[in-house]
Length: 239
Image 1 (cartoon, helix red, strand yellow):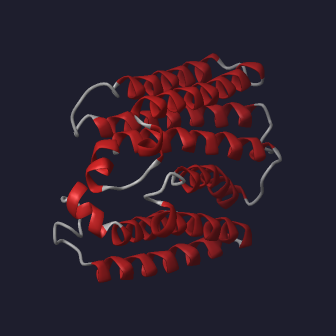
Image 2 (spheres, one colour):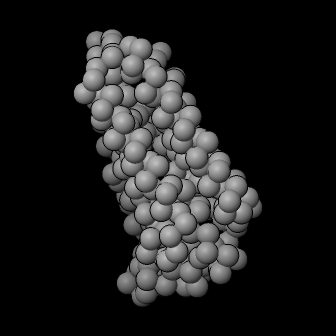
């Protein structure tokens, strides 16, 4: 997965070179640290290495790896800079737990359909927060996003609704299946970080706005880890 993320990231810099010169001049290509051609070569090599690594684990991991790579490249080259950019973002996050579990265990329980669905909702939360964090820069560079389409207020409202849904489902599932106080405390900390990130939205400044989604991401990671541990202890993810 690391190499596949490198491939998607390099392709993203390749595709965004023109807009980054206006909105994000410190990134590798507009700052002169990397050429577009070099970014393309890094993307191709990293993609090859990532798929070879996935194939070494098994056919299932390779299929999920190909889907994840395709999702990221479609986002980079076609859907980023459109109001639909949240879709591949959400799908990519939904694929992550499947790829990790299948790669480590070699099988998937039926419960992973629910895991993937909730992870995709969490990805939508992060996509909304990320779009909000980049709203001012996207407006300056003329880049479209779900945030430029909805506006700041409705983007934050949508983020809050989806975040609350993810948290409610995760905590309720753990409480009714595993019932572990330690896991519930951990999930509570994750929930708190999620709302802390959202609470930073009114603070002005280009340095603070990225924290909206970065803090939310840490919170969702902690919440997700606690939730998966609860599902595992309840026997819902298989032996």
